[in-house]
Image (tube, rainbow, N blue to C red):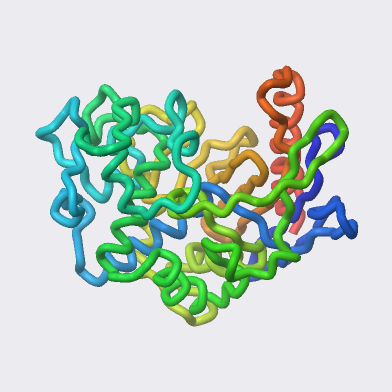
Length: 356
């Protein structure tokens, strides 16, 4: 942690339908030297996508749409790749990063819209007649033919949750996921959480950490704005490990859970040679010879890792904050060290899980 400039780590191992090991390291808030626990709240970034996908597929189970329906039948605007205007974009494509968006690597949607934009603003980004249209958000490949990790795809999925349910994404998830699963410290909004328990955001200048306000996303909530704790998220993970049920609370059918964790487009090449896309979930080929299901979450100030493996009997999760280093400073060697620190933490957790 010292070499990788990680102020705090909260980690746990799930086995036999419970958290069998947990530990916090470092300090999530240097003021007061607050040490993390499984109840410390972190912003889990793209792990949010698994929750948004779960919410949308609950509505799917109500018969409100089919996975291979054209989303234009439900959206109040036409969603088409202008390079392939005759090819429909489906719910399956949105949830499995095959909708031909190109908004993650060369063009990041987070560079443009962090703040109080409603989810309906996706129209302005993607419709050629929109006031903030960005043609670089569209790829030069046909929908359904290639996987490219997309924040916009899950943002639209969250917008569809609101359209189909007639309520906000936050309200829907509270009523149908968080409250039923006893996730009392989980929300897309910091206003609903005890701020003293939220891991701090820091800018790092050398060895100096400067605390800054944590960003509370709105437009990017479905793809990256969730706040939660390890204890809360373990309930959600256990539901996915146990065919859609946690503590006798049923959130999805077994067949839907299986579909979410199945590679949707096996003919596509592995993304960055390490992962395939399920429905809102990722299937990893790990460095350590494991095939796992889960998700990573990375924003400038907070990070999350979630992995299910060993035929849904075991999971590891860990959250950590890091001091964001301004890009004006040179840093390729520190970046490599910081990445390696993350890999080592995951390796140690796998080894610990194997001991139980």
